[in-house]
Image 1 (spheres, rainbow over the protein chains, first blue to last red):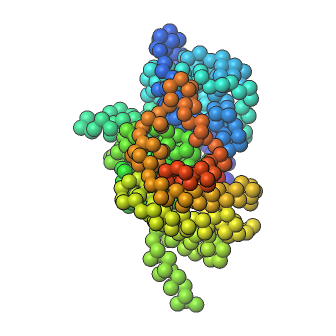
Image 2 (tube, rainbow over the protein chains, first blue to last red):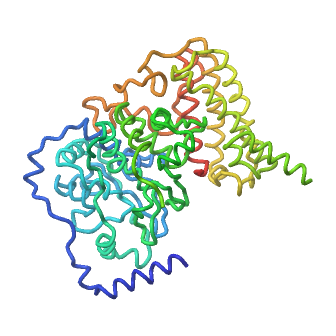
Image 3 (cartoon, chains in turn blue, purple):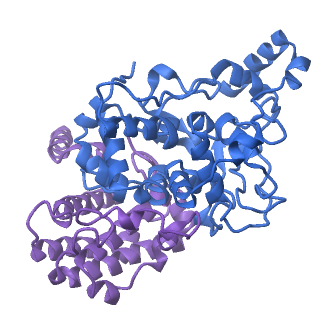
Length: 302
Length: 197
């Protein structure tokens, strides 16, 4: 019923705007290749950023014995089932035939080399502030990934969500750049933490409620989400809630490293993946920065 | 009947937050939740010691390991008879769909906890020698040079099946056994437990 409601609403919006025009409405900005190609990428920095950004966790299906970045486990959502695609260097089924500007546009703008919008299951809105250097580093790292000649399954979504041009409306309505900018009067660690937590590490992708259209509700940032893909849930990570739950900077750093919580529990579900394939590999300084920001910020759930 | 209910409630609330989330369970469901709580308490005792925040005591390690061994393998799996899911249980259907892996992880808990127990007298690794223990040197978590995107991570990927045997763990600093236990918990929770909160 909820789903039907969404469909009706979306169709209504489409009717209002005039569907045909939307289909050819160009999105994203073509990036001049020259400016990016002159930036020298660093493989190690890129690999580290790929870890921090969850590329490896989401685009690999280790559970099913899949190769790294050869395509992730399906995400079952109210809008359909989405398959994180193959990001290896295979020219036909991965990114082997892409240019760095294709890659930059995909990561920062969520637009494919063909000009199609990606579904918001891809957390590109969090990467919008990546610098050219970040992109060049990532690209250098991705170019080291062994090719896997395996096509990514087609996303399974039913009408109207299978109409990719509908996502252009979604972008117009909901897409906004993440607030990762440093704040005066805060420590370097805190600002680094903000950059990671609000940007690359995209904690808010799971720990924030989404509206009927699957867009994050800005005022509910970090207040938790009860309807994640696969019927999973993410708790609030607002400072006040975490403090009530016995968390502090020290034990949060430890949990992001090992999965062990101050209650003596060990993370399960998606958070186990986040730790095991992501945060466990980050430096002490970065984990401390993230925890510093998470435990002390001005966000509050409504 | 009513008195018993209140007794149970009182008992549950006195054991703390974890027990609260588990209240309402009966029978085998309650039994396994209690077992998990006991292991959680053991982890809570071990963690500050493994981090070097409290004084190291091999007896605490041995007794915590005993707790885990007592709930591992068949002792674990027999608490999950088919059909024993549903509220308030956090057990996922995947347990019965992939029983072999579930049972293997229950067994891995035994081998890793036994390794930790045998390593109790070896003491802790130096700072930075072992992920998760001590102070964590940042070196080993950064991507190694020229290794490509997977960096030094390769060994950490996938299920803990490739984790070390009891005999290997017995020869290593105790942190290794502790991390092996943690990885087993994590692997099982990742696949077979519903997320809470």
